[in-house]
Image (tube, rainbow, N blue to C red):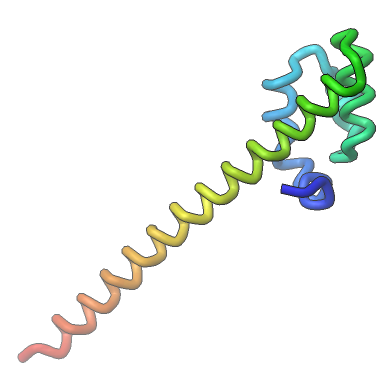
Length: 97
């Protein structure tokens, strides 16, 4: 997932951010507002790590979100397919004498 997408869905991801980086305060998370550089800076500040390490963590987090979104989409597609299959079965049954 790119950072524009993360920023657009930031409210959805706040809990996951808090879970991953528990030292970040709610105010920190509000200030970050999905912006990569803000997140990197706050990770550096709260955890005392180098910029490149913080960038790596932030990017790995975004990649995890991408994988989660793909899995969610797959599951939604499967569920939709099941519902469509049920609907077709009902239609077939209704057409029988």
